[in-house]
Image (cartoon, rainbow, N blue to C red; front, side):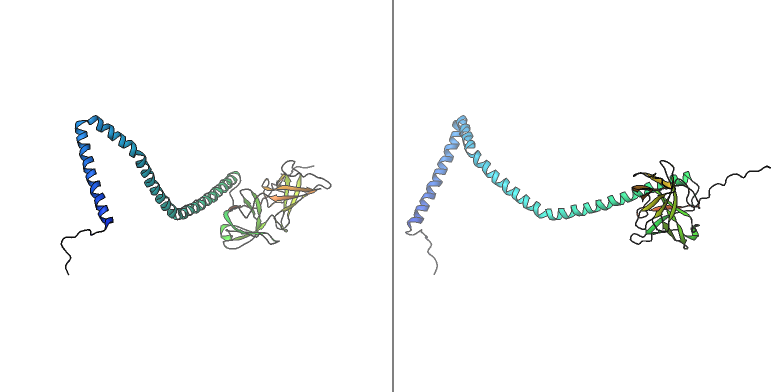
Length: 290
């Protein structure tokens, strides 16, 4: 059945009252609009004051609305930043890790350059070395203390030749292979090096203790020449080791002996020089008849 053409709100008082209020508001709006138009034409100054008053009244509402919108936008940005913070933190951690690796590499290169400069000074100061090679290993926990040098017979390395790093004496060649050699370190119990105190020139003997330190004994009976902090160097006595090579610094004193710590550490030294065994000059022979 088709709906009737003339549709009326019926007898509902609520609907009728709503329609009446809508009509009243519409009529009042039209009348107010016409009144404002006539006021703007007849009294522009008064209309301007009315607009200013309306602006003053609506300003707090506008400001409050803007604050709400800004707050909502800020919350949205903060949520987005919080979501992106995880990825940014991962990127920063990766960058920090790369920076640390680059710093460690730079420090290692700087240390190697410093050691090479010291070795160059040794080469300039002394005769040409037999070989310059890397120290590629050393024993840490064993009672016997050996090092491995990346140079052998093909490089001219032979048993008995002294091995010197940038910071001082390391030991001597014990045995050689074709391209590598074993070094008897100063701290090995079988190592004995004639030394002297750089402060006084008193002769002594440095022996390895097998624990990374040296026992330094005076060659003068009853003498107590050592002080904590003294430096001992090779004396050149007996050959093999050239004179004036730094050996150790004294860390403790016990009567006519002392404990020394080697100045050259084979665990951290990258390069070393192999030299010919030292041969002291013989005194000139005396000639003539009695």
